[in-house]
Image 1 (cartoon, rainbow, N blue to C red):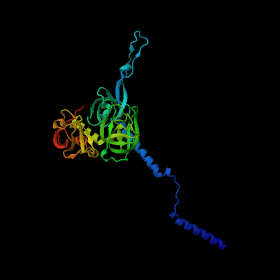
Image 2: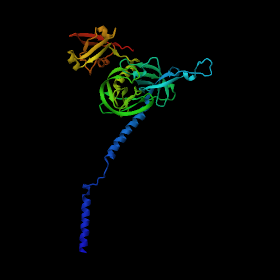
Image 3: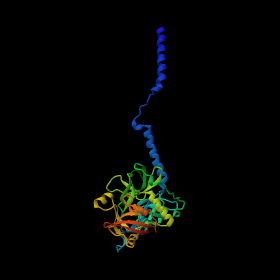
Image 4: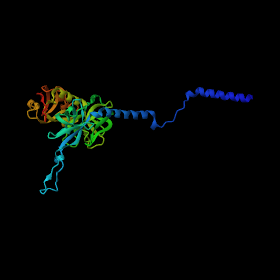
Length: 380
């Protein structure tokens, strides 16, 4: 009996000690790294961000279409019952049929839309805007920026009674960083409206030749590089941050690479829109030169100063009147050095029509100081 009591007391003491120290050795549930709560939370959070952005911004994204009569795109057919084999015309031949070509987004609720200039480059074609619920609007006016691949379209919001136009919220492209999450929305391949793709900013300050393979292209500097899929037809659509703010305008696709697209920084677009709202047009300062930037390495190799090598001077332009010649190298403007990261386009973009600038010119081993008064940029 005594032995039994001792045994019971021993077991009781053991259990007491085990329970007392168990908080120091908590039991850990075995979890697979593929199903950790933090991983699930991250995935759900990312999905929620994209869903919310598309829900909020999607109604502001539009499709740009060309309006081309069917008769100009498809041949008429012969009436088999006509003795003279005269082409038979139908009402459909006369009706304009839209063909989706690009994207855009509303920047004001009264019908101003931003897109790429190369999307609406032809002055002989009528364009149409289709909003997210398939309502159609005729483009009343087009304003094309002479220096950026940007155009502003004007539609009449009263064309569809009861339809409310919703504008986007502009972001700040000066604070972008490589690796930042982005979302693109547009009419991919000119066929799939409101296509959504995601990715990150993979580069900043790139120089590219803009275009989507359908029309003429132009050289652009300081653009955003992204791996979010941007296809022909996405041109003019918004590039968005995770807050749903527009931080760029999708502009071009890299034909020689995969998962490389480009967008114009929205800060440049905001300046253009502000300028447009104040003047009713794209009033831009103009010097009138075509040039090639001479990098430091190229300057050392050719024993010339760093700057902008002038390839062409516009007739009767401010540069022509100032005495700038083909073959000159502009090394400074108002004392600021002209470099790859501070070229003529960037410097002149900060000036106003009528401003007088001082130019330091290198010409045939000599340095000259000239002055030019900037004029209004030509619209074509």
